[in-house]
Image 1 (cartoon, rainbow, N blue to C red):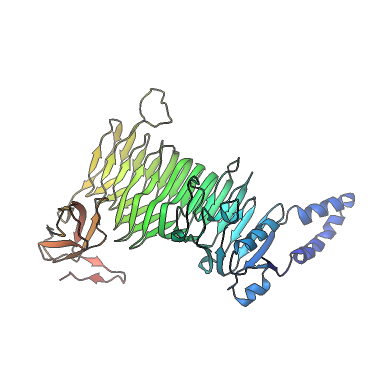
Image 2 (image 1 turned 60 degrees about the vertical axis):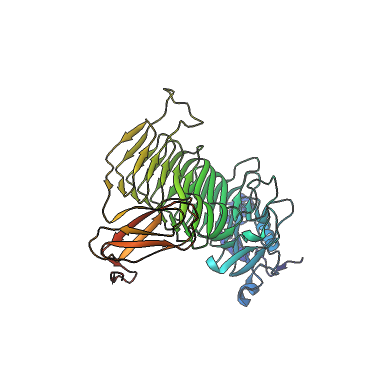
Length: 479
């Protein structure tokens, strides 16, 4: 395949070089060495790649123009052409069809350091071609790879049209994957990207200082949406939108990752959407993490938020309609708001830690506000602070017996509710959709569309007298 290269970069450097010569001439005998350093040692390059369907002006001005099939070849050529001290490869607006490189797990292969790969936001779309095996859209690996940023791209993992071979582990079928080659990659960042529909994960980064920032995730994912491993990880400012019909394995997670942040993210699960396991999760081999400022709103199906790490701080989060499980030790769980979200404490002795006294580090539970969210505790090592539990007549738990598809609830408001919110409490329920009708000043009815069979289902509910819509106007009571 012939790649189209429309212009070089020598011209843009030549003018800058001559502007610097008067100053360099003052250095006398050092002129030649200094000039070489200025022109080749501290400058970075920018190459522009255009898609086959990019605007005509973008194609005319690009350094490389893709043919519309196996477009990763042109992108990889541009990355390899960057000078030793690195630079930027910018993908112009358009659609890039990404194939695989034999002998690798990419896709777009970033096998060197000091690379900035950028696009035009949602206007730059990378779509993995169908029929591939164990291929990531973007693969970051290589000896001593550091300082790589992927930014402002729309990535479609095309997960339903990929295959994963036995023995490949977690290496392929991700949106963006960074993996060690003898050494951990360092300073790897994925920023402001929209990633959807990956056979495994949207982003899996293994390294030292690995970050996923301000990204948006939608569609279906076979495993974690984001998982970080290594050291000094951060997931911040991201949104996972699990829409009606979407299915996700895990939300935001760490595994064997120390000194990490999962902060200021949103996980929104719509009715009919599903997170098959944990919305936020850290595994046992995670040390010294901060999970803060997150919002998890579950109107569909999700198992729990699970905290399994060691010496973690979990604070100032909002969890609604999803159980919270604390299974790690040395956890500080403070100033969180739980709404229809039971808190379960079942801490264990961490598998990789031997404490000085040979026992278990305590869990501290303090300053949380629990609305219709009961606490159950199976751990003897808990330090309790003040944790007000608010239970009201206008909220509660209902059980729908197996073999039925409707349940009548007494709400206790004394007037017809404006809105009744219903959230699933039983993640094993097969119910995909539900509705509320028959509202009166005493009761309402919850119905499910699908036949639940013999399964008992449990829901949290809350009835309110007044509710403002998106336009700020009060919603009148339902009839």
